[in-house]
Length: 434
Image (cartoon, rainbow, N blue to C red; front, side):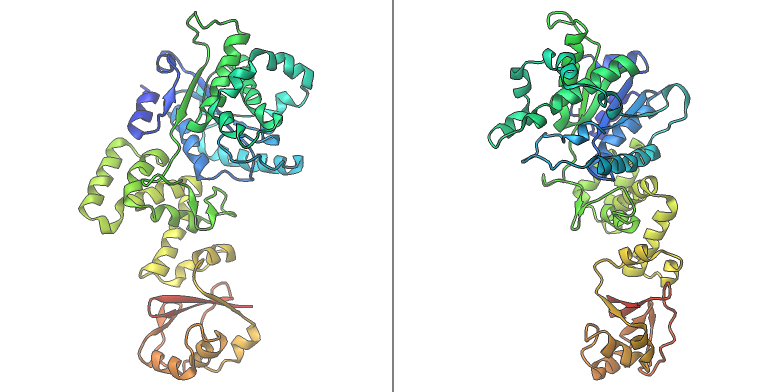
């Protein structure tokens, strides 16, 4: 017996709005639904992950999910709640982005599970041979300008100006829904709450082209949206100090990704556990109760970071991120970093002061005092005298091991043959030997 999809969304706080009849349709039979993702970047980010989770739960509840990569709509850019028009991307960039997104989506959905196997489609496939006149006849004649201007996403741009290109975006997205309805049996489009206007444009095109009337009950196509994820204080969720948190490991390293979730506020973690993990209601309740008993242990954040990092990257990447965190903030040793790539090591030490030195200069240092006082340009210790006193006072560590002898030779094992972690008290400094 499959779970009730709408009930699953309700308890997780993932249901914003839906057209009348949607729940009845889903309870009646296996239904096919889609969500669109425009290739404005080569990777999706955690804002997109909230809608990916809609498709994931939809499939787990026994329905068939379709992920649409907007090769055609990406050429225009969705104006919904954007302050200004997007810059156009080249076809080459769009193709590169589409492939990156396709690979990411294939990690979250099951494409080989029988009747409700997921599918990936690209709207460029049905728009590439569409002439402008054909499109006006096929889609444009079914919606009035008054109807299109009534959408909030358009109204908010009328004061600053909106081009005809962006104004027509909702027609393209609406026609996507109609095409998938006719060719793939799609009955439902889902998305973030900011997509309600575009989604209902699709249901309206289907109603008009298929001969439905407002007077007669019409239940051929449906719409459902999920709330945009915000922080407890109402600010936008999904950005770190360096910008978007991407699902691509080369754009946001697994360590940075893990740290983002680990640093979530208690007030936000209750909702994030429901939206971004596959943990059950019972599991989440137990985690919250355990967290409440000892908030300083950050039980909610650790469970959140583990679940999401493992699914987006891998369990191995999660384990490395945990070890790296223990190195910087706990009692872990640098042995855990051996074998990691330069990119991963540098991501672990992002925010830690770093000094690059020539290998010859490094090897010319006679002892540890010489190294930390001279080669690091005073960033660890201002002078040899200060360095010597600190080392004698057991205040210096190299690769997490204390070095109490000011005359200790430079015979340390360099991570990846180029990195040395110096510790002054609880503060770290990364030496990069090149």
